[in-house]
Length: 203
Image 1 (cartoon, rainbow, N blue to C red):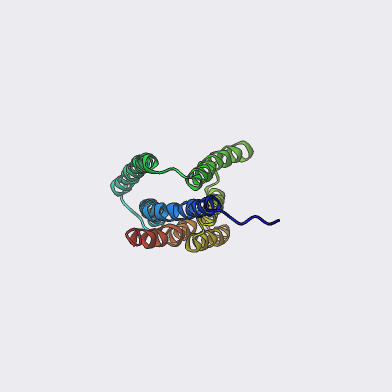
Image 2: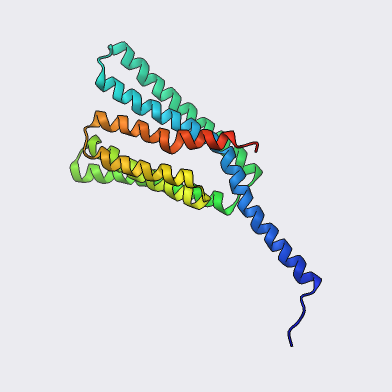
């Protein structure tokens, strides 16, 4: 004989639905807040790549090259410190399964970059930058697409796919042109999504 659902069953079902809803909404809200990280790193890496292109396309004085090199170091250190401070601050507020998954994705990306350079040194006994940049872009494209997939955010997935397509294109070009393409890739995959997400943070 079929049992009629009692109040406890209904309450448990409602609680389960609320938990699922919260699990969906928390990452979305956090993603909008984390749009600032897309903006910071997007603009930083755009600057680094574009300045790399400029220094190869235009003859600069030695003093100007030293200033740009110092500026790059300062900006990278500042962005890294800001990111660490931001992530520690956010971790105290909320920690979700999705957040932990994303952390593993980007830690794996960083370790893959290190291994890629070590393998290149072991095989070629030097770093071939014309090979390194497209491979770096492929790894970045993978990490961005996985991030967008985990967060169910189409714009980030599209940005990662474009990054991958530009990586393939870059493999046919010299280092100077590769840097210009990579600068464009940062705009598409990080800067544009970052500004859109950050603009929606209060909605």
